[in-house]
Amino acid sequence: MQDVFLSIQKLLPNDRVWGIMISRLNHIIMENQNKRKHRGGRPTLPNNEKQATQINIRCSIEQYIEIKKTAKDSGLSVTDYLLKRALNNKVVYNYNALIDELNAVGTEFSRAGNNINQLAKHANSLSKIGKLDKSLIERLNLVMFDYTKKYDDMRSLLRSIRRELTK
Image 1 (cartoon, rainbow, N blue to C red):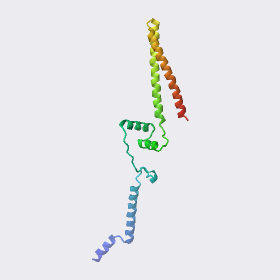
Image 2 (cartoon, rainbow, N blue to C red):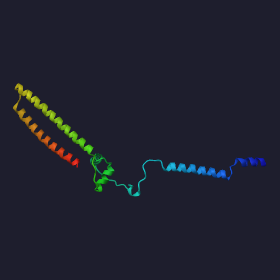
Image 3 (cartoon, rainbow, N blue to C red):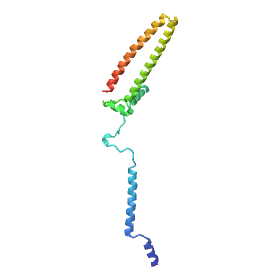
């Protein structure tokens, strides 16, 4: 029986071994807890920067679409855009979207100019063969006058917008 007891005692770790085993287990547990704490992602914000409350508003669908479009054009989320507007902070607009819109307007003006040139070319060809009506000439002159006036207004407006953007 004593031989069995001695062999069991040899199998069981002594106090020093138990201490090492417990120390290793504690180390493994602490590593697992640290892994759970620091999973990555966005760092926590300080309490003064947290957005903890909500404000709900009601608006029509048209108003919502307009607010959403304006927020997108300014490069902000709807929440950030409304907060900046409500707190009288300066809203920085996305000038690339504005420039794209201005380019689209310029393209439309160019297309209108091309159409007017085609009309003038056709009128010249009719004039050469003597089939040009005087009323057609008067209408074409009115269209040309209107186009050049709007084109000049648009150019001056675009120049002033460019000056404002470069300030």
